[in-house]
Each structure stands twice: as C-alpha cells, then as structure tokens.
Length: 345
Image (cartoon, rainbow, N blue to C red; front, side, top):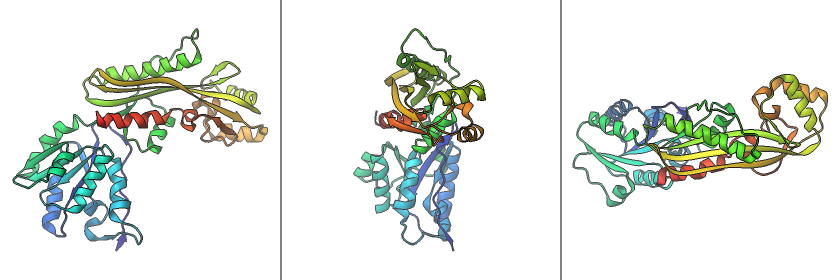
C-alpha cells in the first residue's frame, strides 16, 4: 500500500479555471466510483476541477493515511481552504458532510448542495448552502454549474511581478493574474505617498475596465519604491547603478519602502468597497564587504527590485519598523481583510 499524500491545488489560476472540493458519503465499490466519475465529468465540462478524498488521497482504497494523521483535519480541511467552492453530494446524509460544509461556510467559501431528486435535505444544510440543486442525471449539473462559475468571486492580481505573485501564493490566496500595463509615470510635484497610491489605483482601474463583464472580484494592485535621503529609487537601469545604490545605503537604518496599495471590491463596473493608501516600512542595511555585495549582485537579480535589493533574499537588509509584507512589495494584510468581504457581501 502506498502512503496518502495531500492534494496539490495551484494558488495561481487561469481565467476559467475553478476548483471544487466535492464531498459525499462514499462506499467502496464500483457503483460509487461510477457516481464520482459521472459527476466529475459533468463538472469538468462546466470548467470545474473537483477534489475527492476517496479518489485523490485514498486512491480508491490503495493509499493509507499515515500514522498520526487524520483524513479530515490533515487532508480534507487544507484542500477545502484552497478551493473556490464546496460541492456536497447530499443524496445520502453523513456526519462528515455536515462537518465539512460547516467548516467551509465558516471560512466564507461558497457551499453548493447537489442531490438526487426527492432526497431529504436538512434545514441546517439548506441554510448553509448558496444553492440546492436536484438532479436525475449527473449530466444535468453541467449547465447549472456553468452559470454558477460566472458568479464565483475571484481575486485578480493586477501585476506581472513575480514578487507579488509569490506573496499571494505564500498567503494561500487563490488568484488570477491580469497585467494592467497602466501608465506608471508619477507626478513628482506630489508627496511620495500620494505618487505611489495614485499609480497603484491607476493599475487597479485599468484591470477594473478590462474585466467589466465579470461579476464579484477583488482587484489587487501595488506599486513600490525605495526612499532614501529624500530621493526615490525604482529598479536600477544596470548593475553598476544597483551597486552604487546599495553602497550608498550601507550602515544606514533610514531606508524606507513606500508601497502604494489599491484594492477594489467590484461587481461589474460597480465598486462596492475600495482601499487606496501607501504603507511604509523602515529598513536598515549592514556594512558589508565588496565580496558579499558582488556575490549578492551576481546571484539575486538586482535589476528586478526597487533599489536593487529585496528584503526576502538579502541577508544584510533588515526590517526595523512596519510590516514585512510592505517591505516585500504588497501589503498583503489588506488583501486578506478585503478577501473576507469578497465572499460575505
């Protein structure tokens, strides 16, 4: 027997890619396997990839749960949290189904009940569910879920930045990327805070317009610069510039990451909520040898970072005050808080 492993669900999604955790009272045997396969086919045709513990973790009984681990808490719950929805097949009741539905409901993940026509649905489960769908043939589910996925809330990152993508992945926030290609020029007559907040909002608004035909979504945009000695530093033009910038900052603890954040909660072109401000983190840079600096420049892609360095991979850079995420490139706490509103409104 092989050992059961967690299901890998990508955090970054394509435009029409959705994941559903599917729960059902499963009995070993060909009949239930066939039921899972038929429902899976119907959901796949609606653009939904489903996760089923009996199939994807237990491998139809051919994989053992490791000693000390539990199927629900160690395998099911983590997968549920990364899915866009829970689909509960409730033709036959089960305690585990109720636990899973309650868990996802508490996490603000949409719950959909599907059941054979005539099935008895408890009032509690009906109240938790976004929708109850009765069917005679699993193929009937395809059209139903094609309409549902159009309404599934989505987080959209308005950036091609590898740094911000990684922040979203690290935070386990399922997201889609739509590059804004917005004008990033700044009005130097305005304070640094204002300049960066305006650029971030410009990016968010471009993606808002690009996605005007879509439903509820959270559009996330950011723009960062390093401020030192009252001067703004973006990405260095060449290695020599990166070298000189870092050298000039050595031994100082008044290096600031200004990160403009813009987060729009929208439905169509209607903005339901918005946040737009610049957060600031203060950093220091150690005195380092030329050899340490050259090794860093050679191995860390400095031309991709504002100021030529990143707090995530430069051991000589330290956070002194403020949020680590702000120094990183996106104040992720804003996104996490607004994500709750995405599902609750």
